[in-house]
Image (cartoon, helix red, strand yellow):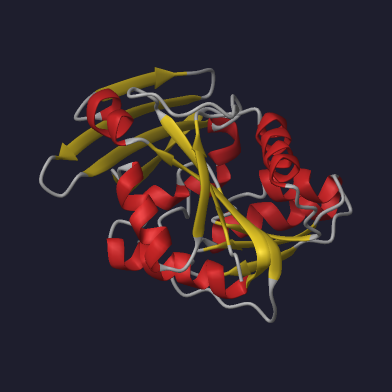
Length: 249
C-alpha cells in the first residue's frame, strides 16, 4: 500500500462525480439513528479528497480525516477552507494511525478496506479503530464484495471516453491470492493536449465471514451487515456490503 495518487488525486473528483455523497451521509446518519447513538467527534479513515468529511462537518459533526496520500489531502484542505469548515486532516497510513484522543465514531468508506490486502494488517487496523473508539462508539465501513471483484471486475478491461478524460481500465484477478489488480491509464485534456496518468491499485476480496472474524479478533462487536443504503441483508450477488461494528466496553 503506497502513496500512488500523486497525479490521480487531482482528477479524482471528476471521475467520481456520479457518486451521490449526500446519499452516503444520509445513510451514515440513518445507521446512527438505528443504533441509538449521537456521535459528536467522527474520524474518517482513507478520507480522500474530503467529500464525506465536508458533508459531515456541514451537518454539525467535528471531523478528523486521515489519508495516506498527501496529494489527496492537498485537494481536501482547500475544499474545506472554501466552505469555512474546521476539519483536521492528517497524512497517515491507517495501518498505524495515531490520534491524541478518542472519537465517537469511525468511518472507512468507498471500499477503502479492500486496499488492506493482508488479514494481519486488517486486524491491526481494526484494533487501532477499537483503541481510539469511545465505549459504545460505532465503526461503519463498506467493501467491494468478493463477487464484484471476482465476477464483475475480474480480469476484464473497460474503456471510458468522456468529454475531457479518456481512460483504459485493465484488471487481473488472482484466484489464489484473491487480489484484483487494477491497471489504469488516463488521458486528461488540458488545453490542446492530453496529459497521461498511469495508476496501479490492488484490492483484496474478503468474504463477510473473514471480516467478521477479523473484527472479533480486534475486540469489536459486529452489529450487522447490510445491502447498500438499506437495512436488508446482503444478497449472494451484492456488489457492495456495509458493516456496522461497535466497541462495547
